[in-house]
Amino acid sequence: MTLPLSPDELLTTTRTVRKRLDLARPVPMDLVRECLEIALQAPSGSNRQDWQWIVVTDTEKRKAIGEYYRRSFAAYAAAGGPSAGRYADDPDRAQVQRRVGDSAAYLAERMGDVPVLVIPCLRLQGGKLPDGNQAGLWGSLLPAVWNYALAARARGLGTAWTTLHLVYEQEVADVLGLPADVRQGALVPTAYYTGDTFRPAPRVPLDEVLHVDGW
Image (tube, rainbow, N blue to C red; front, side, top):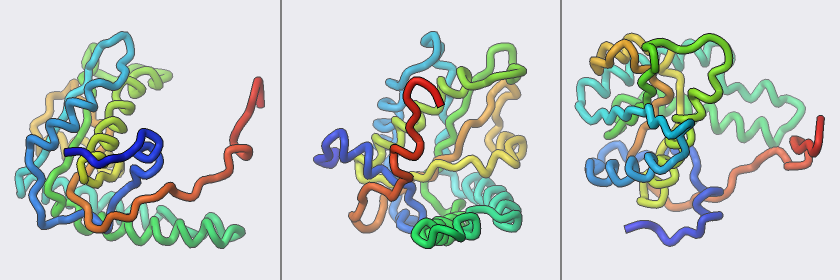
């Protein structure tokens, strides 16, 4: 069953879930498959549908990927990471950023314990990434990842969209036995969530980022 959410409510309350992922409750594969079926309805450039989806439930493989993620996050945090310091002149935004940093660190230590890790990938034409602009290439995968997150939210699952593991992309590929022509686009930990308070997030006002007919 899906939650009784209007389209606008679904779109504005699908949040990154880190601290409230239920690490102890298994997620049925049938439910993940439902979400992926909806993911596959996303647009794809020239209808190529070059996406591939790796669903990781094996305990040892999750722990291996989680360790690479932990290492990557540690380096990211040491370099400044999701620091509130960048918003020192905006106390409200700095407070939000501190919460983001705390929850990101929490997940980094527990990524390998999340019951399902979904890794969306692209199978490359010619076996390698093209030179120059790659917007069209990744634009044929990333809308499907968001479809997956929306479908998961509607089914009582929480997700987080991250790419930090890509510092160790080859090592993760080795863990999963990925072919050389398959490249990873994200890592989406998936679990039932605890609590039920989801609301729109604070955002920069539209008029500060909107440009009509030119800059």
